[in-house]
Structures are given as structure tokens and as C-alpha cells.
Length: 304
Length: 304
Image (cartoon, rainbow over all chains, first blue to last red; front, side, top):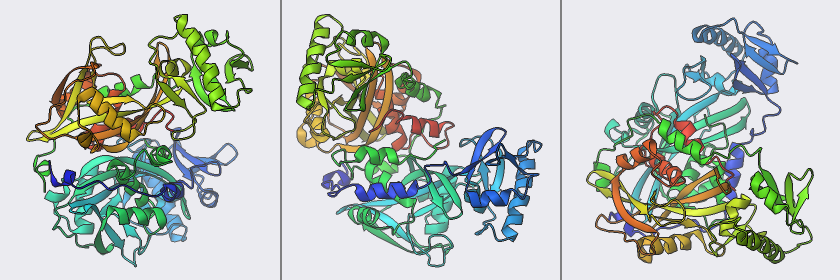
């Protein structure tokens, strides 16, 4: 028996209402009735808000309006992934120059019907949310077992980050770019964001998935996040490296749970991954009223 | 760092097809179009197969046919939970005497719209599947960390068990009866089925939920199972007690995974709980083709 089993296990003593609020906030676009679909070869690959719809109509040679003009298909004459990638990139670049797409990343996301399938095209990461494309990412819960119980490493995002400046975040996390396995992405993000050596980062354990459909200013964010647990030695100290993180702090699980339940301090999607952690580690239990809504709420988004 | 982290982590090296087959088998009644609903106060509480439908029609004072006779409501004149419980019990007892309900348990299941709500009525456990009532249970993964990695305790069910005789099973598991918390049910089942002392059983950690909708000969089995992990000391030996289990064996995770993937040796619903264990402990990974179908398939049933 290891030390962990000798520590009496604390559990959450309050209501689950705050956690359920965080789940709702992440699924603010669960009702997609006001959105227009984008299809490639008959497969729906995107959901677009009305404002961006209007912009796409200026490029009928790439985005062909279908039916009453409330949905689009990528021109069927573009037969290959490479041809579609090039044509769509041209439109996105033009929209970027017109100021209609912000936060260009120079990073390509694969557009697929489901994970691990051959991409139907590749698209600039910044454009993914505007087009409502399903995207994938990895989130790493960095935790240690202390005398007081489980503690979780929490990052404070840099105040100069373009997205979610100053918010609390995971030890490391990142979008899943084209051509990199989740496992390798975990190692890469752990190194870049928290100076974690590869040998240690490789010990991260994949533990499942959360998904959501969030309404954001630029569009519909449809994400599937692969969750990892990385147990860190008690004396290990992550260090910011690439400027994305301002500082790291290790917090007792109770404090993390209070921040999730009672505040919006965490970057919005981190809340789901942390709630999943609290469920898997038994900090939230079937005795809590609303437990089943909470657990099933963690994979509300299209999870394919 | 504990010993567990020094052991190199094995992962599954084959395809997920066998695991996906087990998930499909558990959801053989996912298409409910051939079933008739049973409602109480306008809330759907059951889904009944045509054969049992015909039998219920003999009791119109309790099960009132609605519309074209393809659904039933429990007589609205039965205003209280107690009144409904008594009236439905009378019908079920009569059907039992006529041989239409087998496997009587003398154990009451709460019938609710969702877990932890006040029951709309109570119904004999054996009748629950005939009526297609959503039922709840606890399943306990008993595991140990050995030099070879994680090993799981597997029970062989008694050859004289009424249900699933001789199949492989969890360390302990049981239906969730009325008036007992999940936590207390875990302790009770661990004692009854595996002679595990309460002090040890209380260390079981709730880790989440699986759900399914299975077509079984008597009816539609709609279950939500609360999953628990109980780490046992390496020298602990569970012992059969109440005659439900013939023997216990501790198996390397690889062997358990092969049994799930390649055979139908396990009692059908145990497969889901074990797959969930394999996912949470990183034995199955996002690199496996079909991982997202697998993970999201674990909660296909109504999970409320």
C-alpha cells in the first residue's frame, strides 16, 4: 500500500450547482438551430454563425450556397484534400487581410469527420472556430500526492496572451495539430509550457475525453479534449518557458474545486477537464445530487 | 514516486474492434422503436416489449392503454407512490404466479425519472427488466499493483446462479436497492460476495458511470452502473461467501483485456465497466483507431 491510500480521502461537501454551471457555459451552442452547416462531400464539417455566413457568400467559387442559402458546400469540383486546402486557405487569408479573422496562428488543423481519419482538408487554426470545425486538443492534469492529499498544479496564463489572458489553466495543454500524435503533443506542450523533461512527460496517462459546443464571439467552438493525468514528484517544480504562462502554483484539490465551482477564474474549457478529474478521483461522488447530470454533461459535444 | 510509476506502462497492442463489439452487444436495444412506453404522471418510466405488452393489457385498471394501445399509463387515479407500488405489485405477483415473470428476488427497486429523486413507485427487482425500467447498480474493479503492472481481480460466477451462471464477473457488484446509498451498497456487496472487511471496502473510489440499453429475453434492460476502483493490498485474497461466486483469480490487465476483446466470457455488462477501467488507466489510448467511439459508447444509455 502506498502513502496515497493511507491518507483519508476528502470529498466535496457542497452542492454540484456551480460545476453544472461550468458545464452549461461550455455548451452554450448546444442548440445549433441558428447555425449554417458547411459540408465537404456530403459530410458536415462546420457550423457557421450568421455574421460569418454573410462573409463566406462573397466566395461562391469555394463556398457554394446550398438550398435557401442557409448552408454551404465546399465546391465539389475541388476533388482532393490538397485542392480544398489551397482554395479554402485563399479565402481565409483574404478574410484575414480584411480583418474578419483574428489571431492568425500559422498552424494547420486537420478537418475530419472523425478523429484519426484522413483529413478532408487542412485549415488555419485561427479559422477553425469561425468555421465551427471540430477540433481536438490535449489537456494535462499535473498532480502530486502530498501528506494533505491530492494537489493539482495550476498555471496562471500570461496577461499578454491573446486568448484568455490572466486566466487559470492546466499544467500544460494545446490544440492537436495535423501530423502529431496526442502522445507526442503531450510531450511537446509539457516541454514548451512547463519545462517538463520528456522522460517525465511521457509518464502522462491518457484517461478519457471531454467534449463541448461553445458559442464564442467568432463562432462555434466544437472541441474534443483528450485528458491526461501526470503525477509529478513532490519536489518537482514546473517552470514557464515559452511565455504563455506567468506562474505555476500547486493547490489542494479542495481549493481547485472551489475555484471551479464558485468562480470563472479558469479558462472556460479547463473546467470540464478538472471536473472529469474530480469525478475519476472520487472527489465528487454518486451521493451528490446531480452527479449523473454532471458526469454525462462532460461529453455533450459531438465526440467523434 | 511510488512503485507503480517505476513500472513501465503497458498498453493494448491490437485493434479496438472486439471492445467495440462488446459495447454494441450491451446496446442491442438502443433502437427503441419496437417498444411501448409506460408512463407515470406523464413521465416515461418504462419500455416494454410486445410480448409483455399483451400481458399488461389484461390489467387495464392499473396499466391503461393510451392512444392506439401502443403505450400505457399507470392509472392516474393512483395518486401516491404507495398506491402505485401496491397496485403494480398486485399485477406483477399475478404475472409471477402465471409464470410470466421469472427470477423473483423479493427486493424492491425504486422507479424514478432520474437518480436520487423521490421514487414514483417501487417495483420488484425481477419485474424491472420486463417493464424496461431504468435501474442502477454498483460495480467494483478490485485491483492491485504488482511488479508486473496492474492486475485485476476476476470472479467466476457459481454454475448454479440463476443469471449468467459460470461467467466471469467483477470482484463485487450489485443492483442498487431502494433506501441504500451507493457507498453503503459497495460495502455490503464487497462483504457478501468477496468477504472484504468494511474498513477496506470503504476505500473504494467512485470513478464515474457507464450506461446501456440491452435487449434481453424478458425485456429491455436499461442500466446505469456506478463504477468503483478498489486497490487491494498485494497479499489480500478475496473469498467467496454467499455462494454467488465460485472462485476468485487475479489476472494481469493484458489477460483481462484479451478476455474482453476476444471472448464473451464476462457477464455482459462487466465488459463496459472493464473497458472504462482500461480507458481511465491508460491501457487504451487515443492512438488506437476508434478510441472516441469506444469512450463515447460507454454511456450510450439514458444516463439520468
